[in-house]
Image 1 (cartoon, helix red, strand yellow):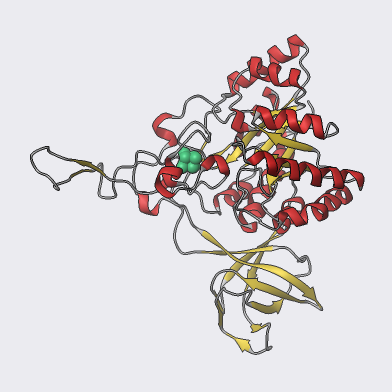
Image 2 (cartoon, rainbow, N blue to C red; image 1 turned 60 degrees about the horizontal axis):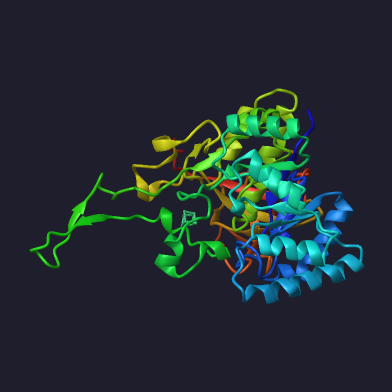
Length: 421
Ligand code: SF4
């Protein structure tokens, strides 16, 4: 059994460094104008060269997304992106794959940059071996499955491809948010906000609270609400996918690349999820289950409750949140800060949530979780000792550093709220 790749999202350079540091083998990043999540990391175009140099240095991989379905006017942007990639290629800097869903973009990249490895994005909604065979014949080296493919289907797909001698890598999502629509085939966000999901601008409108009303023809202006409970009607409210306890199943079924969703998430999310999946995947390769510590870690970030997506069949009601809509994010920990400097036994921490003297924190490093009591700290700007610190404008504190701590480590704080299941 080949060890699959752990693939994490990277919306900007800081997230890229965080994901690599916390154990990702590869990251996927947006291109400036041709990708979903186009709003994220606006400077990443300028940072692409730096990102490619970094991944070469670390022996990791970067896949670039050009996975929009392009209107005609987008083709000009495509030309510019390909010119940029050609310039980088001349410097010996290439991404390890380009994620595409539009057939026109696919052939254009193939013609203009034939050295690039082509991957077919999940936005192409690939659900069967025939579609994979089609894309492989067009020259795709990898396909990303639609999130709607089950484990049993993946096994059959892999078997059929092997029998036909179709040599193509398969990537699939194992963690992250789910669309309530067929992945990405949705106009709700566009209708509600003018932000087009296909252009990477989704406002996640399907997760808002909605109320349904009846209107009787003879009573203009009177709207009679229909409610399932006091919080409204939760008709579009998917939980988040997590396959952390079932990684061996997806590896055995034939996934080459295990993908984590969320290029717009914080470095906190990225560090925690990547670290948890790194450990869980290493254990799965030894046929072991994740430890309670890993499960606690993955539950420590904001989540709408986890389920296994479509991997074990259509989720139905168990994939939805039907009650307690307004407080439906599990939040038992928060992002307290990130270590920006370590010097002479002291660390400078950029504060991301309010900190008080006496707080019990955890420093999550790529290798350990270190309990930490915040006893004494000072304002990094003036050295004055303080008893509380609030987040904002890069506000930082200086406090004692445990010896294992390094720059980039993430600090979390336990909240009083208990986790809901
Ligand atoms: S609004 Fe919801 S269903 Fe539609 S694209 Fe966004 S996340 Fe997916």
